Length: 90
Image (cartoon, rainbow, N blue to C red; front, side, top):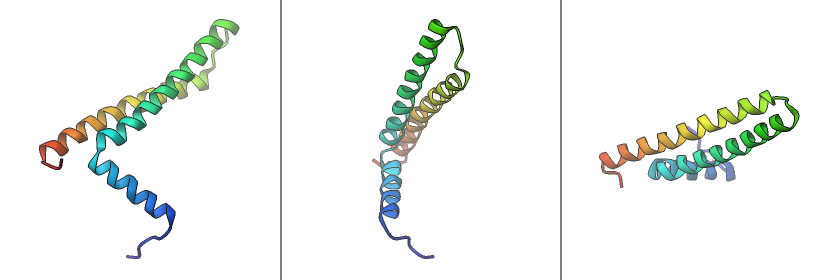
């Protein structure tokens, strides 16, 4: 098996190490960013709906999807942190 070289391989290796050693930090940051973007898009949908009485369906769906992904990501980080603590990895 050949080893990949370059910046992309190094970034991939760093992300893998962080996600394995500090899962709550890794998945928590991703989850919080997703939730914040979801809330921003949701606020945009609600304000546009109140002003123009037109629903931005695509934006509303993306907002709901990002909120769900963010919550799921945070819970994934919590579960992985608990499992790594139970196995004595940090």
